[in-house]
Length: 107
Image (tube, rainbow, N blue to C red; front, top):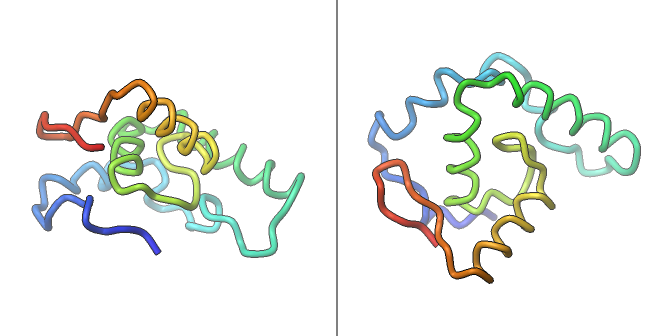
């Protein structure tokens, strides 16, 4: 289960980026794997999802959200699960933190 303690509050301006997401009208099945998906099928689905992300005007906001919220599953901001884990681990090793939308920092 995702730890929601890092999520920003229910303030509309913090979530407005979602209204402009390229994935807004695409089914979530493209971005989140079914439980039994493996191998080539998973890689192909992720590749298609990342293709959508490449054209998205709010890709950075999406990625920032996923890192702050520690989203464990799916493609967010053009990165898959393993890529986000590696990015977070790299940031933790270097002692850097992600900037939040309001200029603060998040671990």
